Length: 74
Image (cartoon, rainbow, N blue to C red; front, top):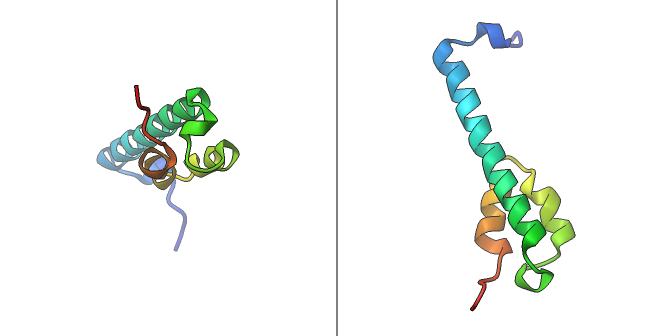
């Protein structure tokens, strides 16, 4: 099977790739920003471990937002 190039994609496929990519990058940026500003005592596990996990496509940011943060009590 030959590799597909960007020019081989339909307009709808290109839009889908761009939308999904921007969603993933936005989620990762928000997760990294939260990780950077959250005190280590409010993170489940090591901040050094969560930083590369967030880079794993959609799974990383979702995992961090679900399991990586401890609730901030006022």
